[in-house]
Length: 555
Image (cartoon, rainbow, N blue to C red; front, side, top):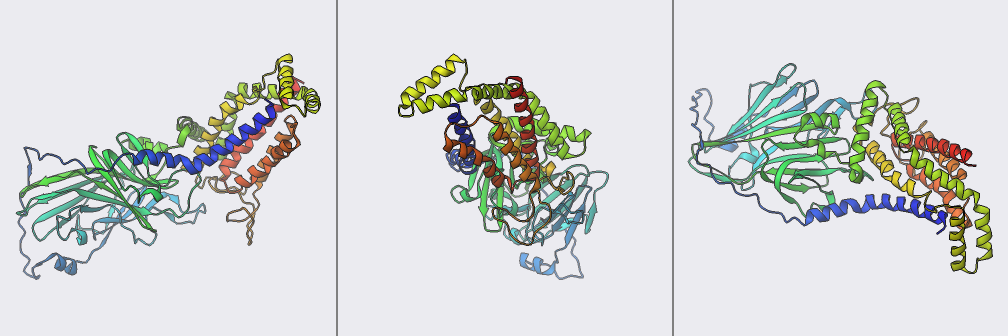
């Protein structure tokens, strides 16, 4: 078989791989998930020994009219906002539901500019509430509209040196008391959450507790990376595409954590003890809701039960998630080549510790990988150099046997045998390198370390497309902002030069197709992050240098 046709096949295979990743990989994962039929959480047997609860006696307040109903409680009590301030984040709780309605990350901003506001993980207008308690059977009347009280009774809690607690409590008309106890650390994004159900009524509670996690629905579809609800169920990562929620909304098994994630950030509810539970999903145009649904629990009168969780609201940084534990680092998934991408991410961060510029870290990382793959590249370029030498002979064979394809192929194979050339020698080494290229590609696209990370000159955000100047008009194929994609154009030029150095194609049509490839890639990369483009550009430059060296050596 003609080597040039093989090279075209390899290039087309790469393009098919990209299309397959974009359109079908998540689809196959969903089909596997869909095979699991949603089940109701297993009902736990009531333990023999129950923790008793003695209802506290409340002294009557003479100056106030006794509260006689839940609705009267909500009318009489004005819900306040409680702010928790730590070195890493600032949370605002509403006493309506004891829910989080604002979560600001102090180490991250909305945009690359220094005066940009801090990154908000919930709605910017504080209209979205997260970490809301409920019961599937609505067995506690008034809980949905509960206005909690706080202990200590304050509007601001500063966490600076040691772990601090904040308790929200509410009691129903029938005597059922709900407590939500949050524990904050000044050094971690991990937040402890204890939920206590104290049954001071004369009725048995038999229901499934739910804790709802909410986030904004992603408005843009990403080519790579996952955004949406996920969970670690039966030690397997489940990632649910938004358009598949209506098909299957319940996922049951040994549930370790549920999460809602976007390209760079993650919100999660983690079960401290694990066990059988369910994730139940719902979606609107604006909000995704993921509920952590506990197995049915029986809480008899005069007893109480406690549920223990951790909460995580923070960056999808492998360093941060590894410290958090609870297998939350598995939420960062780089696809098929995750086992290659994660060591590359570790190495990039290691280089950054010594050279605090992620652009330079990418360049050094690319050089190191090129050194490791140098023998494969040399073998490929050597084969291409040998093929270049016999191009005149192959041209003669094609012209001589142009009307007899079978005879032409026989003569070409005889020519390979005579000169001891493997027609696959130039292609197979390149195929071996493809997983490494795509692992780096995927890692650089999702790495939060590159978010708002400056490089040099006009490139002040390695996670955004490079644009020199800003134009007030649109440019075909370019997403805003509009400007000159300098790095991308240089990358396209490097691909064109590399194409020129390759052996000429015997078929004029194939030759034209190959010459169009640099233009196609330039258009594709025009909206990619500058970190990705930088990696591809450096890799091309190193490949050109290696190809030039090998051709000189074997010419």
